[in-house]
Image (tube, rainbow, N blue to C red; front, side, top):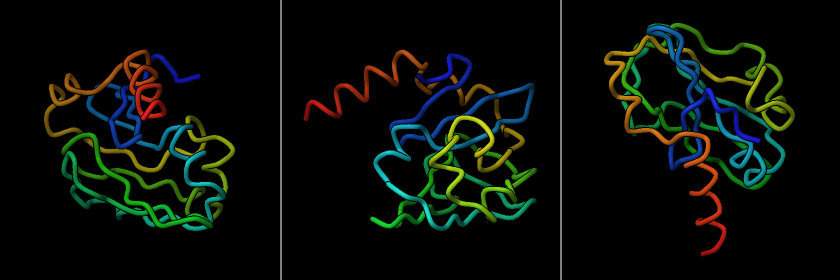
Length: 129
């Protein structure tokens, strides 16, 4: 269910890194927990994001949730399709509904993130509690 080429956070974000650019989104698990997404707030191109800190919000019919960056870097793109059609997050969170692209400050930061298998084990553990 979770793409092997992605890395994951305990806050339920994913990142796919190509060279020095990371594409960031929320996981299938996160969108299910949120329910129907109705609004997404993202940073602007040129903004800086900090690992472990919020860079935007996702609003659903249930709640407003912060989105946390898995890395430090500069925003190179914010997905205009998701901002115009936030419900895309429910339909395709690992594909067309990516949120932002970031030029990584230090590629070594991704070494602390979870693999798909580790993330799936983490979710199983979360559900057990």
